[in-house]
Image (cartoon, rainbow, N blue to C red):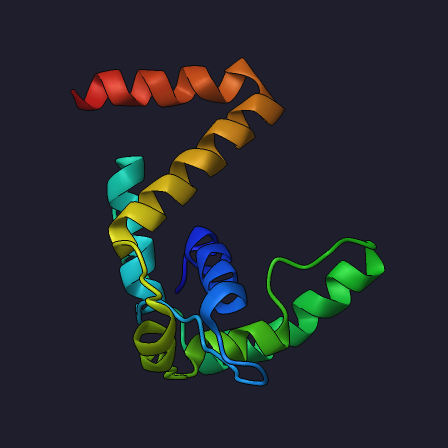
Length: 143
């Protein structure tokens, strides 16, 4: 997981300090999908996800989901390939970028919080006060 703001800063650093012909991996933090969803649940003041579907079940269903979205001519939320990537444990090192460029990443909780707040603000802007009232009511009930 890497914050787009960190990637933008890394690209600037590579342009300014990078050696010609070199490649730099601008990766961020390792975090599981469960950890990410747990953090989002905390920010959204909702219960953490407890149900876990089998990877193989989800992988099999992804074919049907892609077919469905193809038929209704909409972009799928997840593809078969994205499910495989989410389950993979790719590990990338940004040590070279840190060492040669001074590349740094912000705290992952800050990135998740900022992304969550951006998504909520833009979703509410797009969908109006109906959802804003629901969130405000929920926040008051939880207080």
